[in-house]
Amino acid sequence: MARAFDAYPHKWGLKQPDTNIDHRRVPNLMTFFERQGASLAVTQDARDYKPGDLVTWDLNSQMTHIGVVVNVPSDADPNRLLIVLSDGRPYDHDYGDARYAREDTREALRQARLDGITPFCITIDRDSEAELRDLYGEVGYTIIDDVLTLPERMPAIYRRLTT
Image (cartoon, rainbow, N blue to C red):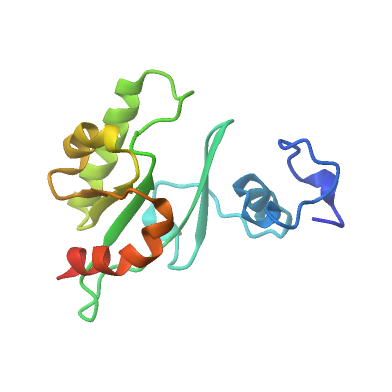
């Protein structure tokens, strides 16, 4: 970025690269992949993506996300998990009508289940419990009180999902 700073998004009002965060900002990663010729074409065919591929989404001008493509289950590891770290709401403040966001989320979770993937949500928002129960089911989510405890809680969460 230091050599081509002007080629990157200027959403943060910086005059020079910020080595503390720039490598983690999804719009910067999207630009980096494009500049390196490493961007994949967006398709609806899962076969176009390989395990280990990084996939970025630009859902609208304010909301980007990144994920990693994972393998299909094997005899050694039959568990396919989709662990969602969320603020507890299936929409951003600028998404528009929240009903559409809930239904989009519900459909994505339904499709994941049909594909043999177990969705599970982790949040810190106690006020969203009714919505989480509606989307993920009685046992498809957990609420933690302090996000800083997530690293120590993950092994127990993983055991709960895989045993």
